[in-house]
Image 1 (cartoon, rainbow, N blue to C red):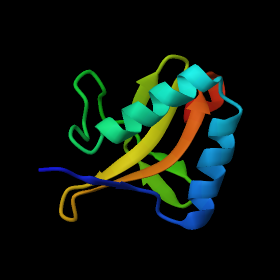
Image 2 (image 1 turned 30 degrees about the horizontal axis):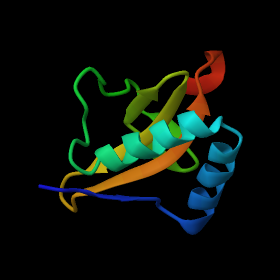
Image 3 (image 1 turned 60 degrees about the horizontal axis):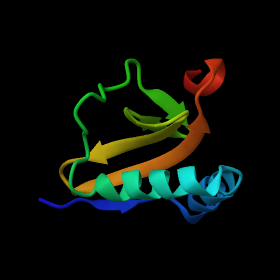
Length: 97
């Protein structure tokens, strides 16, 4: 079953796109493709659940998608078939805390 990929609010969507703008264009395309791929495969193999979940804004991101040196933080609602995208961050010590 195909999932819908969404942002929980318009404000979070704007912040996500603002963070995406400062990433090199080629990597932006890879991140966009990766997010679109979550519709068919919301839990890509090799991407374990985050333990403990990471609080992003007021939401709990339970999954991450690795794309080069960046991480897309998101959660999956299996009842509604929605992938909630919260943030994209450059991988560094403070990415997960």
